[in-house]
Image 1 (cartoon, helix red, strand yellow):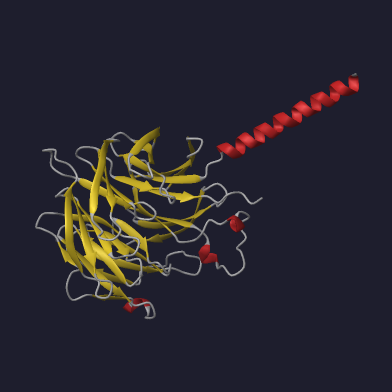
Image 2: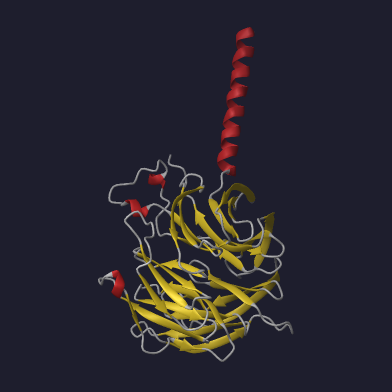
Length: 388
């Protein structure tokens, strides 16, 4: 009898431990959200599991300045990297990295390693910047980091070493007024820059085989012009690169442009107003879901998220809805699988998570969490499943 009781007790303990371990696996975050808190001088690291609808603050990283623009490297978070040992055929530059720029002096470009198991950040390098940068981005090859200065009216080029760490800037190119975004097209043929103060988008041919000094060749004419006072701010390309979707901050409009892949120029196809409200427009951010089926934008004066469905053939947009969200939503990001998005409010100092209906594009609020002060940028990575 004593033996049977002891055996039963051991069985119960085993099942309890097994249940706890399984619960831990279920609750483990499969995505990590990085939020730049400009006035808190920090980056918040959140873990999120969609199936469990579980959102937790996992880490707060001090950065020593008003951090705002961020960018992710193209390094993969693959199961083979869980031990931080690179699989055969991969270079150190394949490690996932997060880049962030501070907009208070001393201006810096920070590089963080991403732990593939947890998503936690550890600072890897810091490079001085000569200007206050509004936007940073990598080309598709991962050889260069580009940065634009809104106040300095300039484009800055930083080569990356084999580990993906930016070196000191190698060239500075004068631009028109108030550049707000710099991004390579999907084919990595051109680098586009939106000029909010000049009402146009300029572009440069990317010379992949040239020295870094001659990396960019400016086009003779802009890729596109907007109406005076529109204030072109952020933009995204369709998955094929055939269409460019441009968000105008001051006009509060989202425009569709058809792009010539050979010349790089673009022509207007369609335009939508984000809101019919009488308040002065103040559009902010724009993102496309994986696969390019839906596109969303934020409008700060009305604190709204606005969604559209995308016709793959024509590139044209059809409104699917608008949703009141966090107060003054300057930034948001869509998960890599396109199933949900995270939006932050500069005045509410919170982040809200919305599920994206894969058929209709409708948004459903899942939950919210407080952030630091003045959250102004969001990036999301998907963690690999643990190796069996």
